[in-house]
Length: 517
Ligand SMILES: *Cc1c(COP(=O)(O)O)cnc(C)c1O
Image 1 (cartoon, rainbow, N blue to C red):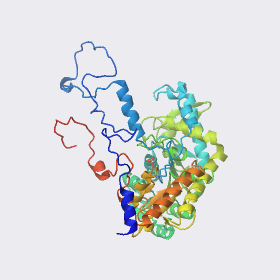
Image 2: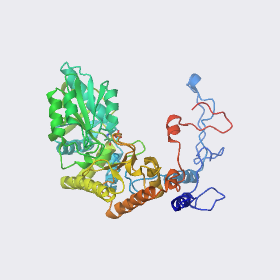
Image 3: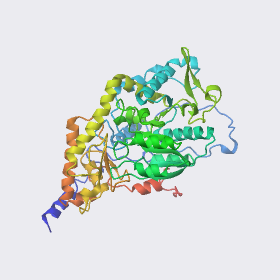
Image 4: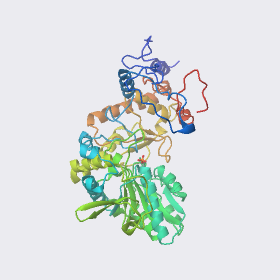
């Protein structure tokens, strides 16, 4: 047996020889499900017995107790605090999840969003009582249109992907208004996966435009495919390889010459804000992710906000409601008539994610135009620093500098028995959330790292040291350290496929048979 495999066995040994009686690991306690903590008759509140009523629910009246767990208040508090300690968050450490832009959420934003004048608003309040909130939205649209160099904005979409749908529906409405029934949307291979999904959802036939050897849209292939059946071209810039689509202006001109629109996925605008105006690149329509570029919190499914920027040709088709200024007053246009006669309809109830608007505007105002420009510069600098410091031990997928994130593939793991997944899981043992894995699909076994611009040099160096150490371990043949990773997390490898395909969403007492979930 070789020296290196001895070391490998040592590396995969349990971290501690202690087996505890309680199952807890130090002060990291195992936690039962809240239903398992239930005790009949126990409660955190004393409610008066309700007066007798005659139920009018007919056959719908509940026959059994509702089945909520009974816990005292301190038990509830401990349960959720213990669970919250299992969470990894941007407030705990570096979160290099490529494409997701896990930015620091400044506390100033939170403070402003909690001002009672904003926090206590109700969307059905009469407009004369919400003029301040509407002014905030108006100021936000001013910043967004100025930064993007595009005249229109639809504030309502609740996420980037919903913004994409909103944009394509505007394009479809604009084409149909001219009697044009084009059926095809071209999507760059280097675009985000939501782009083709959105085009399909909007009823279009999706065709891929390949990437060239430089990881960008293949301009010749695009030009060859353009024709009278193409409604739009969708691309992401910077693209999902973290690269600037440097031929975008020429691509946009070709798309326009074919009578189609250019949709740009602007989720990566944090690399461009203050430095590039997308309108100048020939983009007709682009969503922004306030929850990425403008630092509003996200994760765990929300909340998001995906305003859509629109060129003049698309603005009349924007969804309801939208803001209109009449002298000193602001009003939300709610009906499809007059100035809104061409609107394609509605994306969601009400006016959008007010809490996110407040935080995003606070971020813009506290940074100022020059500060936002520096944000983009620092995001690009930070990612290039990581690329330069680990480029010799991981395998960068494309030569040259990157934008706000750097892409590696699994060539450096060849012959080691370690996969991208193993490598990413080992990063958890080193105290970091893994990078994005196996995305984008244009390279094999992708590892996509987006460090974000607020990381200090110390924090970057610690992360870089962990990456370099793991790369050395993998190439030294210590595969077992990786295949079993994470060793030090409360749970090891979960069956993520089963969790996604067969989620168990209801708890049942153990003595009752489990129906198909
Ligand atoms: C995050 C992201 C999206 C989707 O945005 P959501 O707000 O998660 O719907 C789309 N495209 C790119 C490039 C992204 O990074």
